[in-house]
Every structure is written in structure tokens, then in C-alpha cells.
Image (tube, rainbow, N blue to C red; front, side, top):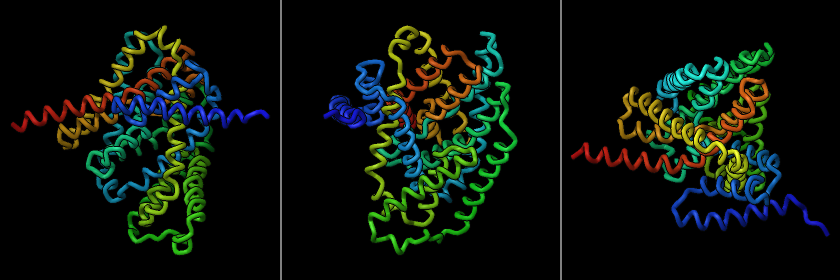
Length: 390
């Protein structure tokens, strides 16, 4: 009797995470690195044991949605609103500076303006998945740095929509008026919901008394809320992950986070792992080796540029240098939504196949190396702060 190939793939992934994770945990590596390395080794470009990248990527996208749902449940809405200047103004400045730096580079290489703006957008988006996982592992989500970083990530995710519209116009394929109307309507509705929750701190979740002691119903209610909001924001042309994030904020506002967390935590772990594994599977080792010099320069430049930009912007909002440096390190990698921006630019003819492969390699490597970069820079910041106190 033939075995189901999907089940075999999941078995290989589970064994791979156990074996590779055992080795990497001895080296004190985070789960993020374990999952990405597992994807690289088991994926089509190395051992080829797991080749259905589309399936893993689709399941991984569910993990991203669940992760954002859990992030929303950790959010303190009053703290988020109180720090709106850092989140909104700081993010706009950061994106502008990212595009400006790429423009300087593109000026010397004669790049067209569409490519410059595309690459500027790509490097300006940080990884929500990586940053939140690291903050959760260190129990820093509710810290001052954690709340500021979360606010910036939220604004970045919202600004993905106008980035899509701008890239559409640059490619000569503008977004239709209907799509723009839906996106604006969706943004207005989200803003109205957040204002409502902020003004009604005693908000109660519908049916909360009925499902409090019914574990099975809790699971489906949580799934329905998470994916229901995701479907709604997707309908309005916004990020589905953003919808899950808003659903998490609704749960947090209703003070019902405990049973939501208990009901979905194990499921979230599995799908988030699949998301990072799908990132690892994108890394083409042959392309990486052939262009290692260029990619190494781009990865290093990305880390340094984002680090300097974000640290400087946050410090300009009166955040202490130690916290600014740490937050800048957290925000210095390129995020998962940049894959979507790169894909859109490639299919619209803004960048070539070589450019797209380079973007994928650089994004993947910054995600892989981000925990190491953050650890190194935060240690340096801590030592500098100690010396300044002497």
C-alpha cells in the first residue's frame, strides 16, 4: 500500500527539526534558526527530501496569521496609542531614509526610479515573525522596547498596502479605483474598531459565558475569530496577517486571552515552524554560492543601514541609546512581506529574474542571521552602557 506523500513530508520535517534542533540547541541557537536551517537542508536545493514548497508555504502562511493573532493578544492598546508618534512618524521617516539610501546607490549604477523605490520598500519592512518570536522567548513583549517595536511593525504592515499601489503605478499597471476604495474603507473600519476598543475598556467577548468551560467550542471559536478577521481584511485588499493581529487586539481588550492562548498554542507552534521552514526552502544554495560576494555585501549593508536608521530614528524620539540600539538591531532584518513586494515587482517587470533571486537570497539570509546579529549588537550595547555608567 502506498504511503501518503504529504504524511511522509511531515514525518521528515518532524525528524529533521528534532535532529537538527538538537545540534543547534547545543550551540544555543533560537528556534527561528533551527526551523530555517531545517528548511534549507531538507528542501529542494540541498537534500531534496521535501520538495512540495507550495504546500509548506501555504501552511506556513497560516502560521504567520496565527502568530499575528497571538501577538495581538499581547498588545496593550493604551500603550500602543500612547506611543503613536514613534510608531507612525518614526516608521514614515525610516521608510523615507531607506528609499533615499537606495536612491544614492542606484544613482551611481543608473537604476530606474521604479527599481530604486522597489528595493527601498523591500529593505524598509522588518520581520514581524522573527522579532515577535525573539521578544516572546525573552519575555520582552510588554517592555518599553517591545511595545515601541510592535507599534512600528504594525504601521509597517499597514503601509504594505500603499506600497502595493505605488508599485502598481510604477509598473504601468495601476490598481483599480474599486481596489483603492476597498482598501481605504478597510483602513477606516480598522481605525474605527481600535477607537471603539480604546474607549470601551470593559468590552466583553460575545458568547464568552457560554464557551468559557467548553474547550472544543473554544478552539473553533478562536479559529473563527482569527481567520474571520483575516478573511475580512483580505477582502478589503489588506494583509490577512493584519486582520489576525486586529482579532488578537479584540481578544486582549475583552480580557479573554488565557483560554484563547491555551486552545491554539500547540497549533500555532506547528504552523509557525512551517512558515520558517518555507523560508529556508527558498534559499537556492547554487545561486548563493555563485553570487556569494554580491549577496554578502548586500546582506551586510542591509543590516548596517537598517540598524543605523532605526536606532537613530528611535533615539530622536527620546528613547535611551541602549534601548534605541537594541530596538534598531531587532528591526534590522528584512521582513517576510518583502517577499511579496519582490514577487510583485518581478511579475510586473520592474526587476529581472536575477534581481528577484538576489532579493529572495538577501531576505532569507537576513532572517536566518537576524538572531545572531541581534545577540551581538545587544551585547555590545550592554557593554557600552556599563562603561558609560562607570
